[in-house]
Structures are given as structure tokens and as C-alpha cells.
Image (cartoon, rainbow, N blue to C red; front, side):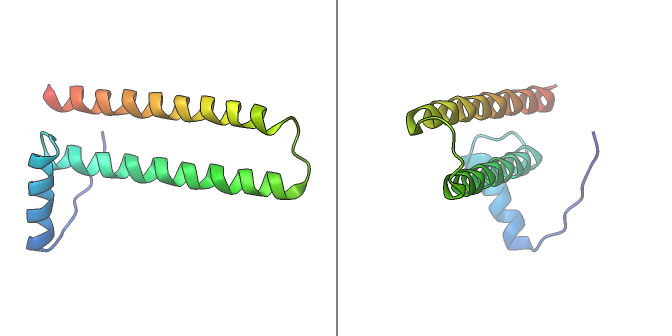
Amino acid sequence: MASLNVNMPKDLREFVEERTQRGGFETPTEYVRHLIRKDREEEQERDLERLLREGLQSGNAKGSVKSLFKKLHARVDELEAERKRGDKAARSKTRR
């Protein structure tokens, strides 16, 4: 695994340490990984929303809105399962 060193002011370091403890994370690294994963997921959601808007505005949408939302819900479920697997894998690696 690659490493990344981050320099930060004392107040931010204290905040990270506090959030690590209150958030149930074992290490500050685990907390930072969680934040990065969360940011990545939010970016994917923004991309999906943008694509949906573009598709709806194009007038070329195929199928019904109900069908679209079924597919959307399935994709959200997939992303949530991926996130949970990623969080579990990260926790098990830090506990070794």
C-alpha cells in the first residue's frame, strides 16, 4: 500500500484525533480513508445525477420513468454494497 504524508496545523490535527475517537475509527489513517471514500462516493453521485439530467434533457430517454428509477435504485444498492465491502476491508487491514 502506498503512503501519503500530510502536514497540517495543530488545530486540524487535534480535530482529526477527536473525530477518530468519536467516530469509532482505530487510527487517524482510517478516518482519512473514510473521508476520501465518502468524497469519492459523493462525486460518483454527482456524476450520476449530471448524466441523468443530461439524458432527460436530451429527449432520448428510453423506457418509462419507473424503469429508470428501478435501475437507479439497483445502482445505488451496488454502490452501497461496494462501500460497505471497502470499509470492512479497510478495518480488517488496520486491525492486523
